[in-house]
Length: 622
Ligand code: ADP
Ligand code: MG
Image (tube, rainbow, N blue to C red):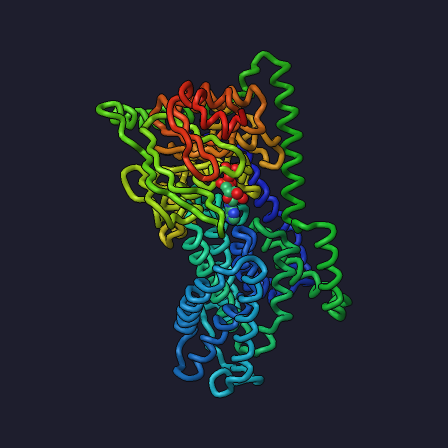
């Protein structure tokens, strides 16, 4: 059985606290009759819409202003279908979903190519266009008059209003459950990885483009459902409900609640829908109230109520575990503080090394096969030849160093091998197949993993979650993966537990198991570079590409890295590493490649390269 990690416990505890806080606010208000059922029901509708925004922004860092458009289409679809075909509510909802799905998949393909603020502007344009269309397409949407007579639903003997309230909150609860699962799963980690660093996420095997498009579509579906429920509840639709001011309300709910937590949406929606309606005087100055609130949130709680709550719980958990650690240290049972899950982790490491061992045996069977073959590889930046007609091959299960002065083209070479830069000149074969033309995530999934010269960890994930993204190869971004993770199928949950256990083993191997649940920003530079190595090796890659990893490590950390690289070689992993520390390079490499001005000037075992006159002249400056 997998022990629950502190972060898992914390996550569960925090959202339990959130639900408790919710009940504490809502139940007494309802019982005293201060809170109208109407407000609670519309809170459910907006909860779905804000969750949609949070999945997109809080997880993947994409702030969409177009969701008010999807919401509007979701609302108008049942109204229009009822008017022209007397269609029941359910078919209207489905029609809205279908239209939004097609729109989201199409728009996603265009907008998601735009970065940051351009994505926001693109989606904003869409939102404004939808609003303009519903206001002016009089024959279909009723223009400024809107549409009425949306069919009602009735469940059993319940009144239509109660039936709808039930439908709304059951739908909201189901989508809440789905979103929480998604957000804490492999897909959630992949999304946060993309939010932090899309290139580095791709190099861990995340299919960035596909995942973002499918998430955008999923989130548009949420907005659509929310829109249809909104129309059904009001019995009519009017363009004013879908104007930019409505979008601002939704954004306020998202940021007030706290983005990135999903349950923050519940708090944001409730407080912002409930509070002003409860307190009469505030209602009069609602816009002023919203403006002041926005300013307060931005200055005082940039992470919203949920963020502040989470912070509090984390500090509390820290203080308690600190107290427990010192208790344990004082008593005789000091081993109680050793990382839990050693048993599970131990099993995994056997499985892991077993797999590699087989590969090494295969390679040792005959002549060592070349794992990487590079022929006539070139790359120009303008007039600069960063890599110039380079050819070499690396045998399986060896450590090869790539050295050369600054600007020699070493990092560019790694970028070409890992697909970060497309190969335009020459051939690259990896693991027996051409790598040119493959995307970085495809190459990563084939078993080629890398680190970066300037560390590129995922700041929105903890240390162990960073390693887990590497271990589980992120996500292929398919609809199937989203659904599996959203439903939290037992198989996906078991996979996640295995990935956590295996990642913990890798952290133990680099001596960082006790920092597993820390934020990466809390680690010093050298340790962060080691975490990046763990993230790369956690997938048990066949080829490991390291760019100046030892730079910035102290002597102990360097020794740890050396031990790790040697044991990986024994397990059959092929390593190509860029390094400036000559003692490190000479000690660990089987063979060395020397680049100068993009050209390969020497190649051979350390003692030969060390004496090579061209190398001495170019590299050592002798
Ligand atoms: P090294 O890693 O050996 O220090 P790099 O591969 O980073 O060298 O760079 C090789 C040369 O290519 C340098 O002159 C660098 O300025 C240039 N270069 C690298 N990447 C780019 C880029 N994306 N655009 C323009 N020039 C680049
Ligand atoms: Mg470099």
